[in-house]
Amino acid sequence: MRSRPRPDRRDGSAPNGKAFESVWDYPRPPVCEQVEWRIRVVHAGVTIVDASRARRVLETSQPPAYYVAAEHVDTALFVPAERRTMCEWKGAASYVDIHAAGAVLQGAAWTYPTPTSGFAELVDHWAFYAQEVDECWVDDERVSSNDGRFYGGWITENVTGPFKGAPGTLHW
Image 1 (tube, rainbow, N blue to C red):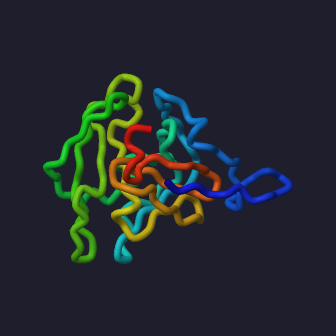
Image 2 (cartoon, rainbow, N blue to C red):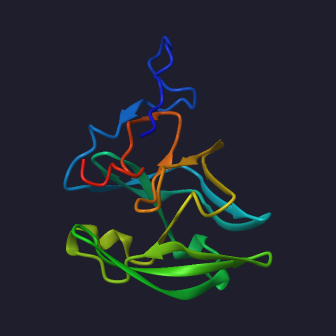
């Protein structure tokens, strides 16, 4: 159960310049919003994603998950994985293993090929587990991952918890 303190800043913003957000203020059911922030994913020096915008899903208790359009993703590094999951809000997710610089990152990225109507904007978008790759970035800030592997949230300086995902938090 990780939390991030709020530094005392005159303008009320986090060190990254973005407004503070508590994951406990995110809605349930979740929402999807477009952000005009640079999103990057790098592993072993190989750039997997470099996008000038993305969609992020905000759901109560979880750090945001970022979804990037396939046109900004090096999908040549992907090999379909057997893993499938079901989200009550978004539908059925399919996963891929990422092959980068001799490493195989099992089930490190996922997509919703036919999401529910409420999340139709996620078609042809990919999300990545920050805990599986070397680097994930929002603008010029390197993110940290949430604990556990059930959620693929990215934690930035402006996102505060505690965060769901660590052992013992699944049924909060």
